[in-house]
Length: 260
Image (cartoon, rainbow, N blue to C red; front, side, top):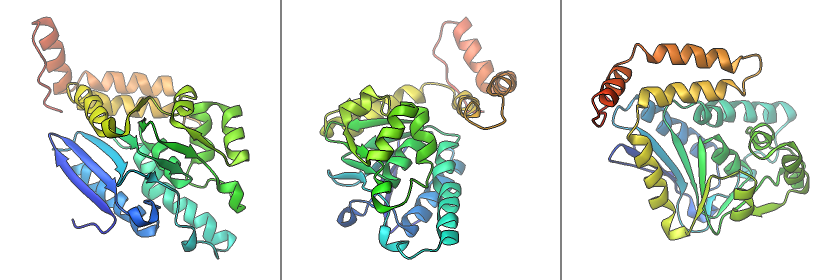
């Protein structure tokens, strides 16, 4: 598919999804959200895609926020629908994606940009990255999962402070807050993300999908994550990957997982 606002490329089972609106600091608008959904939906069905690296074009921004001009005159009902649609199409979709999603944060990740990065399964930041949720400075709150995912990652008190002050933190502070897993030099960001993807690719994609579901279950209201873990653990025993993994271990050889 041809995209207006994305660059989508695949190499060695890694799908690179790059948000490409440099003149707008890669800000999210309706079209970009729709294209991201389409790219992820295609990746879900593509057997060649095993890991996704999500980043922004240029050196200034991952995603500098949402395109405010699109919703500055919305009514309360339209605002509610905007958040619901965005979460369903993109943010929750990425968070529950069955294949690993690594956010490579280059530069600014603000508002919807940080919310998108937090939807990924984990985050790597360049040393020039700046992160924050400045929505209250516009008279609104984060609407794409920010009030939920930020406390999960950094704790309630720090999330309250970040959201109430509308301030930014740098990459090293984000690392101390556990908002990102690693910080690298900007020119090494994608290479580092690729090294993490390479480690993931050595393992069972079926088991990784099961682990994503089990981990996410812990954060779903009314769901017992331990029960989900038990179910997913048992289901793994019926897979070809389990048969291959245990056989390789017992025979002291490297596993060659079929992904089934």
